Image 1 (cartoon, one colour):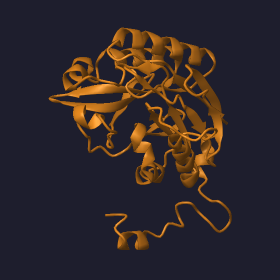
Image 2: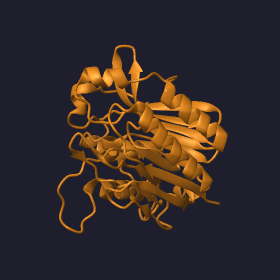
Image 3: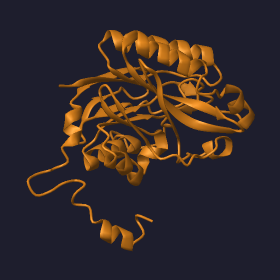
Image 4: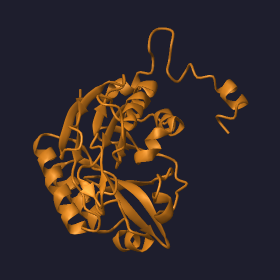
Length: 275
């Protein structure tokens, strides 16, 4: 049995919370009409990303019962979906780069980004949350945000908690790369899926924001680390794949090797990898 997963690679505009929510709503509804069961939106899907300063970020941040999560929860209920989406979370005097999981029952959980990228360090507070892993009607989902995916230890932590699918809202900035090569961020997502035998859905964004271009490299990966669907780089759109999440529970490569059972934690501790 497969689960239909969709990543909505939508254009976003910093500060335009109404417009961003309208764009996301249309994308979610379209994915639902196409039979999606799990829908992933980009990082900071409600607000946009390139903030001028902390004050601008604070003006766009919202609590867990704010308009974006409320709207996504209503859509999840209306279309029987599980939705994973990024938003700037206001929490007292702190603001986190967060991702919410909603389903027909409402808000299921929120993850706060642990590894901040570049200028995020100037405006966001760094969280100490462990990766979010929770059970849904479709299987066990893990959640992290963008730069988190580039840390093998963090991806492994989700896999060790039994996640069937890692969902990662991202905003991947466009950086120079050799002609014909995949973005390194995408390569790392493929590698993380294959090294852990864990399906992965990464949702990037499209458009240009305050002079920053984006890769637009959304990808859905199977448990072997092979792409099931890849977005057209830099182009708004949606990718969809029917994913056999049960494959993520098979950690054996063959009769003699197990991706987690073969780990030498005794050796890793000797070099501080588990400290």
